[in-house]
Image 1 (cartoon, rainbow, N blue to C red):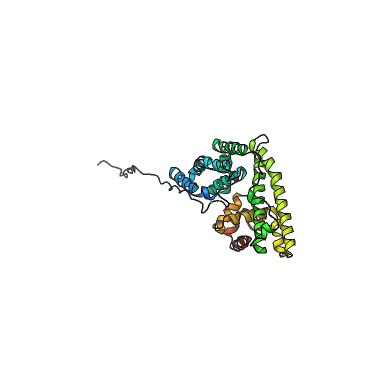
Image 2 (cartoon, rainbow, N blue to C red):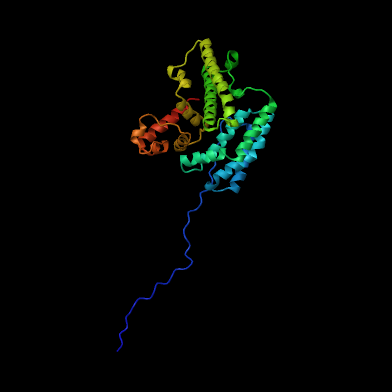
Length: 311
């Protein structure tokens, strides 16, 4: 009798096995437009962003979305500058803040946000926007390079129908705006080549903005002295705080609807330093990492709550 070896049948191959792929994340939109955004452009801006999200609905397409928004809003911003309703430097600042807010909501890390922002500033769309603003500004002739909202007011102009607290708050808001403009143009100067238009424009803007801030501080002190009343020592030191603190407060004040965690993401994107001593308690010295720790989270919430009361 012959011997037969029993062996198992070979496995049946599985056909048409589809590989799992993660679902693309949809684009997230900011809750509000940047502070000081022209009322005449708000509706058009939201409409432009909405139309762009239909073309680029995924977070991975956020850079293309920003370029689309920039291209579509360039004529409207230039028209505002041409009609003398918006300063060219303020138009540049507002557009930068708008695009940055779109990036903040759609990147997974600070490094990715920084890379996208730098890539956006190297595009032909951004260069075209800068050139058109410069052409419109030259067409208007010589004008002050800081917004009219930063122009100091003294005497009865600042005090008509306003309490001393409101008057000082108004001065502080203008000083804060001026600080933000200085910070913005300082960044442009540091990141631009010395022969580029952005570098030259920053060199022209910075001295005038610093002069405007000094005039605002002097006007505030003079007005306060004329009223014969003094602010508390903590409030008097508020407008002369460390530049990093002013930058942090500006972010909080211009984004009143952001949660503490979203503000932490924004602080990291803007390279706002942590509070001194926190680095020792963290593996990675970022605001988001600090927020994950229960003790530091309570401190962050207290800091942002205090900054919101500095209006």
